[in-house]
Length: 198
Length: 78
Image (tube, rainbow over all chains, first blue to last red; front, side, top):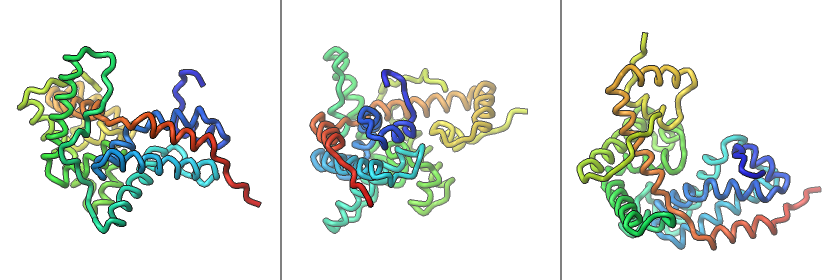
């Protein structure tokens, strides 16, 4: 397949027929998002890795047994599997969290900055650590929508249904979450690239 | 005439929840409305920062998944 970027839908089709390279592209495309979402719920790296593996194993079985029927919507589908497994873990332990954030231990601390200087790496780590603090400080409804939309890839309609609020409320919470993060980043003079448009 | 858009519309646009028609209208509004454009840039910047902060799983976890996939034989149903 070389360097051509195929859609998720195409990769799933190829993988249905046993193309392992297609599966690896799907895995590498979505691993960080799936893993981060699970980690933000369970707050434990080892458990999050176990659940990540369980998530992809379920996906492998479903696709290879021709039971996958959500063409073109691979990410929301696999994120639902991940979310359900994470929540099930708490149900088994008789705990019922909403989406919760980690408690301060390295959510964003293990990123790889191999091409950067030591100083640059440190600045990035500090920035991500500070951002982690800011997310943790958000009001719970804003954190919940932020995680569901940004990390889990759920649509605002799905979030509204899941959290039993109107779509406007879900949008408003997301807007306030981003605005609050922006204000805090500005207040603490955290550099961020504003030259992205559109 | 340029349609007026709310900040919630910008959030929908930012996260790809708008239709192609809406996209064109919003992009037109962004060119004409500097305040809207500024807000959009700020929101995009935060979104990008969040995107760069994703956490990576270990290589071992990925290897386990790849090995499972390679060795998996779907059941043949008769």
